[in-house]
Image 1 (cartoon, rainbow, N blue to C red):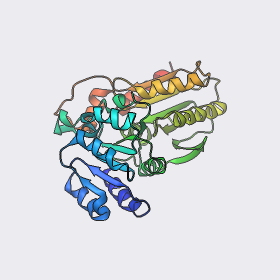
Image 2: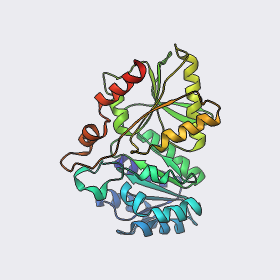
Image 3: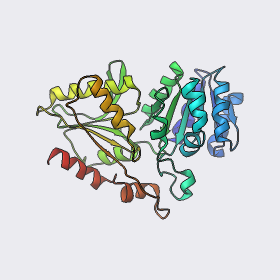
Image 4: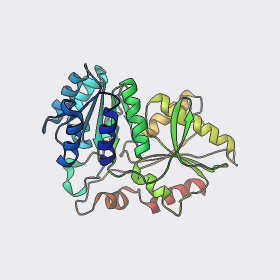
Length: 312
């Protein structure tokens, strides 16, 4: 969604001033942003850890978007993220492009399979994971409205599907499939997995499919409320709660969601979680092929996982 990001930055800057900082970015994306933002756009060169502290300093004047590859801005600057964002609460939104293995043949230096799992250790940093330009607009605008320190993972390719937004407890939840009588409630974090679910023929037509575009407590509580609404319409007394995420061997999304259910006294609801396992990247495979061949997130694997839960 890099192209969508550049267009959004230029358009939004006309409405509200903010800084766009990067520790080096491709010229094809940088030059139009620099032309539109002028001195509010800063390219620091290859200085990833320093860029976090630099952005935190600028945040005393205006809100800041700090953009780079997810492995660069989300991992190399982790100490600065802990201090300047999680502790000092500066109004910075980190945007990490291409998590997991999306940069494929560029090698392990460009991978970021653990970014979300690590940053999720800091509850004061809000996590965004948009799947479409519509979701990106909503969550990036949320940051501009409140300035809360945030980390956004931005997958390179948006999902080519139209969401059906629904307001739940004051939060916009993005549905991609709804059913009057759902037999499964599926929450997705990751554009690859969502695409597999939605590509015709749909894997499971009678399920509710929505995305976990934000991982803070209030938003996940709204998702829990959405589940309770779906449960009332379900033909069976028990509605499976399923999370499919491209987050890594440690799945902070499922654990956070289970904690929310506990707070709501819904301990009887068990979350079924599918996420990729551990492994070493095969440089002879591209990013999409790697996700399918090595991580268990291909269409066949997702369908088999759902089959085990829904028809044991």
